[in-house]
Image (tube, rainbow, N blue to C red):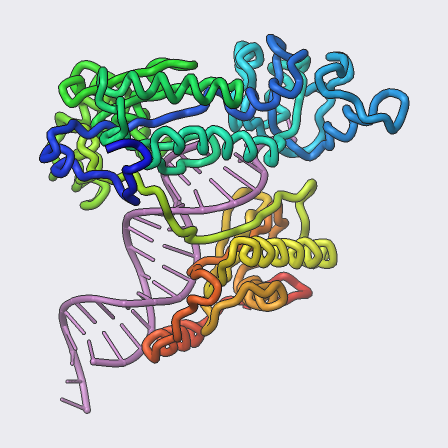
Length: 435
DNA sequence: TCTGGGGTCCTGGGTCGA
DNA sequence: TCTGTCGACCCAGGACCC
């Protein structure tokens, strides 16, 4: 079977792979410092300098391309380094999306506030995220992959899973030969490097891709579990974040090996039936999940953090305009992608960083901006508005493709009606008081 | 002067009809 | 008629990911 003949929307299960006499080989590919690398392709003069990407509130491009004499469009690669904005001059809210290695040496890293980063490395050059350019490169490297290995699952803008099992060369050297070919093809097409891990399943492949960064390849087999996986910290497991990691540490569990040594029932007792069983499974390197090539979106949302905290009453006009704009943008997203939604929700972040969300499920589906605005407005009446707001978001969920809306059945109508009958908390528009 | 934006998934509480 | 159970669905919040 050749790569082009292979046409399946899902990967083989481990059992199928075994019966075909092949070892299941799944790759995880992660682009190296993707956002920063894309920018450095456009501004090669910044190579080797501390650069942070993020913020995005300043129109850096506009400033840079205008040129010192006024309106002339400048070629990016010839813009002098001293013309770039510095982190110390950055004004406004925002976090760092990524930083180049020279910037990381100062302790600057992803998800760090711009203000804190400015203290650590004021001389760093700051560039905004150019999502259009990032998406362009994302499409480019993904199409390069699917030309070689068609069973690929999107995992965000800069990473994918690939099923190597039935691809020519996918079994050679445990997948190393195919991984090398993909790395080379991506570099030739984009000028960017990536790191690849190949393992028996997605879980281990994801961990493996971090072993040898940047521009590396790591091969992991079932029998490597104890030597290569168990010494790692539990936080290396995709799905164990800060909270679960902290709780495990409190229970004296730091490594994946220590997690694997725990009794499943004991883990279920501490983390609940589902999570406990899952933790036990992943600690033993078990993961049957297929590489899924197609998936439908579950929700679409738009949100924005304000330059300054806004008050529901005193900044009513400004908030109203932002709210309407968010609804219209959600509607545009739905229309552009060909979906309609039945559930409309809002998200608020108060000045104390507490979050409130409200949803409303309607009888019928919509992608109309005015309807979304009206439904979201109903949600807004059910949240306390006595504190200042720093973020507002609008979300559409329960999505179906336009033209494929199911008829609401009597049961659904009854439940929708019952949910509306619930007592609702509201706020007096003028005083901000709950009622 | 901390802490973006766009997502997915899970949990637990609640209601309703069967 | 009353009560308990169960599945489906809704909703809010939290954790996690890139």
